[in-house]
Structure formats: structure tokens, C-alpha cells
Image 1 (cartoon, one colour):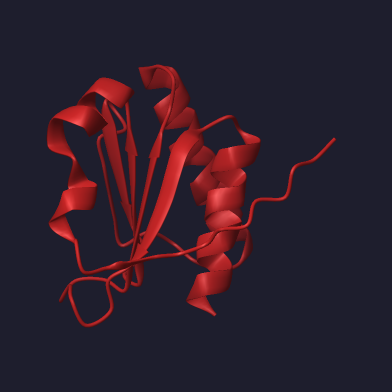
Image 2 (image 1 turned 90 degrees about the vertical axis):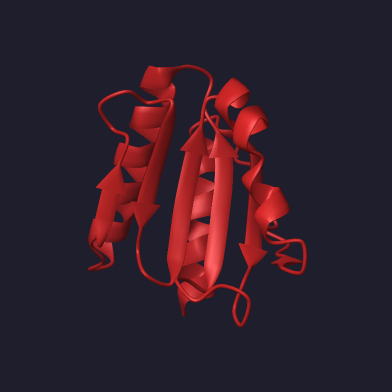
Length: 117
């Protein structure tokens, strides 16, 4: 069920022109979540806009974030939905922290985006 949400979140980011989207299955590796989703926005306002759009989509399915951080600056926004934690970055911040490297044993999930015309 959460993988459906994960794909819906990733599709939302894709549809709103987010980039470099990756989802990692960290079940059994991380004690805090099952999935990590990481993506880039173009500028700080874009990052915040992506986060707000994700919150709207998740609210529609009855999910509220346990924790949200970084909305005031937009360089790095974290949305924690327990089973999935979403990290939205400005490209330079993502390059600096390289979160993907924290879970080298995690399985990258094929998100299979739908390209809309």
C-alpha cells in the first residue's frame, strides 16, 4: 500500500517538474522508515511548492506527515510519513549531502513514470 503512495508521490514530483527522483527501499536497513524518496527542485520556491503539492496529494488519501522541516528556506525540505521519508533538495544541497550514499544496500525502486501529454 505504501509503495502505491510512494509512486504517487514520485509521479507528483515528476509532473511538477521535479528532477533526479530516486526511491530507495530501506526496509531492514533503516530503523526509522521503509522508503526514502529523494528529488530536486530548481529553486527554493520550487522545492517548497513540491512539498506543498505532496502534502495535498497525501491529505487526499488521508495521510498527514508526522514531521515537516525546511519549508521556511526551501534548500532542503523533509516530509516524514513514517513509512516513507521524502527529501526535497536544491541541487547544490543534494550534491553536498549525498544522502543516497547512506543506504548503499538499499534497493532502488523502479518508479515507472507516466508521461502526460
